[in-house]
Structure formats: structure tokens, C-alpha cells
Length: 128
Image (cartoon, rainbow, N blue to C red; front, side, top):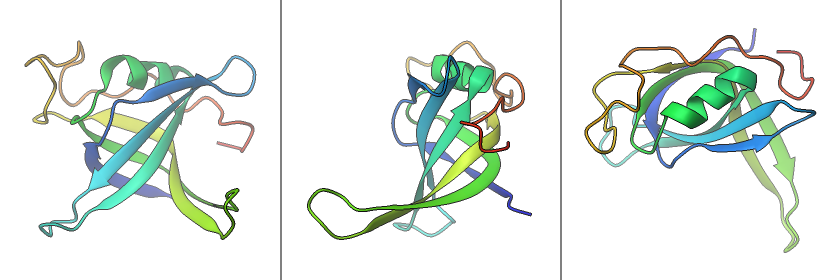
């Protein structure tokens, strides 16, 4: 079973784009501090469909979230040569957590501890 759950802070505002067909994809970058000062894990997260739209609408840099999903690995060769690789999470669930920075003192219209809209709705046909 390929399943991972991380709690962390968004390092930048989420970005929404169109995926396959009309499906929306939300890209986020999560920092997970693992309890050690000066040591953090940074990982890219993608949410899909209605959940992507909700994340893009209500989340922003500095917001704390819990993300559950499947761990993915990809490799590529940039134009300059060499090899690059990264681990990402294809989110099945994104929970908005209370107590984190929320810009302008508000809660982004979504109170603490709430879940981003609905289950994952596809993911580019990768069997979510």
C-alpha cells in the first residue's frame, strides 16, 4: 500500500491550472519540520478536481495543512544535462488545520480544521 500523511506549512500560495480535460490541478509546496530546528522536508503536493479548486480558493502561504495521499517519484533530464528527481504527493485528502498564519488575521473564509471539498476526483488517469 502506497500511503503517506504529512502535516506542514505551505511555503507559497497554491497555484491552479487545468489538467487533463476540464479537471483542475492545484500545486502546493509543503514544509514539514520534523521537530528539529533548521531541518525541514520540502515536498510538492498536487490536489485534483473539486478539492483543487477549494485549496486554491482558501489556502495561502503560511497556512498549516495535513495532506494524505500517494507518494510519487519522477526523474527527468533538464536541458543543461544531468539528471533531476523528486518525490511528490498526489493528495487524496487535504485538511486545513487551525492555529497557523492566515494573512490579514482572517481564516480565509474556511474555519480551522476543515477539509478541502470532496474526495480526489481523478488525477490525470493515474488511478486515484
